[in-house]
Amino acid sequence: MEAGIVGLPNVGKSTLFNALTAAGIASENYPFCTIEPNVGVVEVPDPRLDIIHKYIKTDRVLPAALKLVDIAGIVKGASVGEGLGNKFLANIRDVDAIIHVVRCFENDDVIHVDGSVDPLRDVETIDTELILADLQTVESARDRSQKKARTGDSDAKKRIAILDKCFERLDQGMPIRGLEIDNPDDRKILRGFSLLTAKPVLYLANVSEDDLKGESEHVQALKNRAGVEQGEVIPVCAAIESELSEMDKADRAEMLADLGLEEPALSVVARATYKTLGYQSYFTAGVKEIRAWTIPQGATGPQAAGVIHTDFEKGFIRAEIFSIEHLEEYKSEKAIREAGKLRVEGKEYIMRDGDVCNFLVNP
Ligand code: GDP
Image 1 (cartoon, helix red, strand yellow):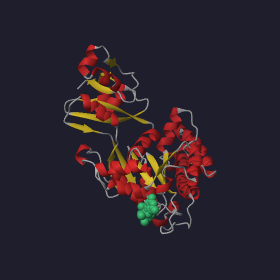
Image 2: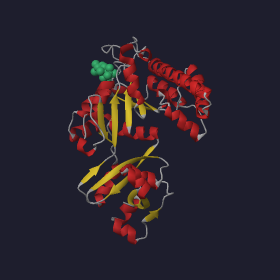
Image 3: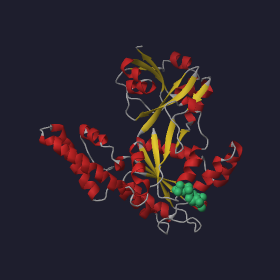
Image 4: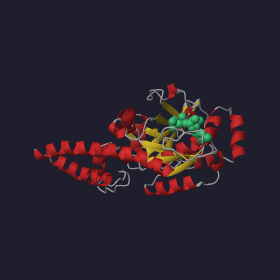
């Protein structure tokens, strides 16, 4: 699961990226992640892991991981290669979701590239670059498909029809997310184009400390705009997150309480990213480890098992599943089994958020 942080220069991206990724992770637990300077892997805090751990003793607890990529350098003209533009746009192509940091704090000491604080204009500037980049992608894909269509390739004709729809929408200055395509095959074709504006977006409104509780005019404006494309807006204060990230646990708890906040932004951002991407978690819990796994909502038992190991999807026989509520009620897996509350689910089972699972698979 990978999210790219974008935004205009000087809006607080690096401050936030550094604060969110400050805690770091034990990278040996996440061997699939190569760590580069602009990449941080953060654990997704999940209180349900603590509940499971209360009843099942284990050597280690492994939360799910979210990879954050700091994609700097989007300025006006990025789509035509201005300021290393193309390289950064290519970086966005690789992520699952976009976290768009928007400056909502007023501070004369921090220069705004366009001279004033205006979140809607800023969002538009970035969107325009992404839309222009997508237009280029769509046009060249259409050229390629048209050549193929002339040789009688019927798939190419299908692609052209979808590309035409994309072109029309982008040409009106609208992002691809929100484009309604009912046919699942067509949706798959669309995904294959990896368009930047098709990726789900989450807005982080970087507000000043005073605006954390109330809702400033800037945040309200952003929320109205985000609503149109089903995006969520989370107010954060990068300066405060930066301070929090440098504190020990006790001081952090005290400062959060003083600010009237329940948790650091990382928890909120991680949860919102899950939601934006339509993800949920299930857990495995044994003597060696308790672990959270990430799956798309609607995933079946075999698909969930496939996240642990690709072979498990094919080899899936059945799953034994219990809920965290039952664990709290009966206190152990054994007691849950004895009470007849352990469910046995087959290949068609649709996973529920928070299932605790044992998979039986053919080796
Ligand atoms: P980036 O270019 O988007 O990565 O922005 P930076 O994170 O480098 O921040 C640009 C400047 O804004 C720095 O001087 C930060 O200290 C300042 N800054 C970032 N976030 C905040 C904030 O929440 N409040 C205030 N007052 N200043 C901030």
